[in-house]
Figure (cartoon, rainbow, N blue to C red):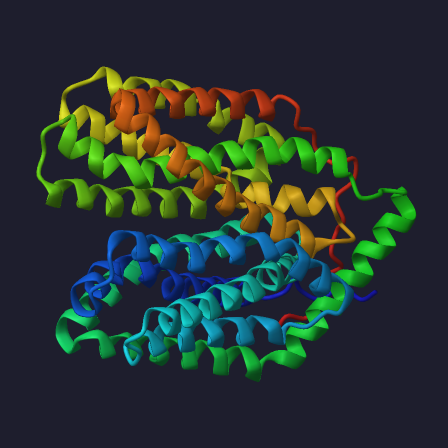
Length: 400
């Protein structure tokens, strides 16, 4: 093949933008729950049911949607998924009944599930040789979405009432229009990547490594539990243990999200340079000591520094973990994306009620010690990781 240039990095940032809008839409759900309780009179159990509608089904079906993405390359699924998330959130403000709102939130969650496997697969396809960097850029988009989503939701609903949820249609339509306008180029890059992977596999004899992916899941699930635990319990810990205000506790969520986004963005570049499994192992080795130190200090500033560092260490390897999962399953990039992006979310969500029960019975300090233990378990999982024997090199192709 003639060598011209690597795919333009602009495509990686386009995948990032799509991920940002998709997760921004979905992350508005927890932010508007207090408004639904106030305006629609829902109780807390009903509000929790809406979170179930948003996350659980979406996470579980992503691997199956990934199978479809692998069999039939359809970059248009990204635009369709994002559009569904935007329409679902926009519709919330125009509905009064609980089950109608439940249905549109589930519709939004299904849209998110449609986007992520194909989005992760395409982030790999447009990466050229820089898999870790491109997947980290893609993953950073999701982190930024979770930063912007609550901000946009609270501002819009505070300014215009529940119908303010319609504001998400603006960024949704813009990114969907861009994605659909580039369908031919994205399909071309997808075909080039698929051909390159097949050539490399034919030469090297590399096969899908399911045991390798299973070992990676130990790390991914551990990270999910610790990350979800931080987002759920750090605001409560700030108020109940460190005796800070509710505003300061809520502010820590933004601090965690920003630290996670910055680490995710940087992590892929470092993993490309130093090796995926080794980089993941080194950064995750600090999760246990950092998590262990948090409940051992009563100083808010020291605790904040520990939380910021912990969020960074959890997320340095986030993008590389997705890329490594795709290396383990080179013939099933969509399924690998669905597992590493989808099931990871569901495991963290499932653990939250258990940790909440522990917090009620034994206190939030005990919860923090449990999260440290889960982090240690995840580190042991990283010791099992190995680099795939051969990583498929992408032939250079024109990206403009």
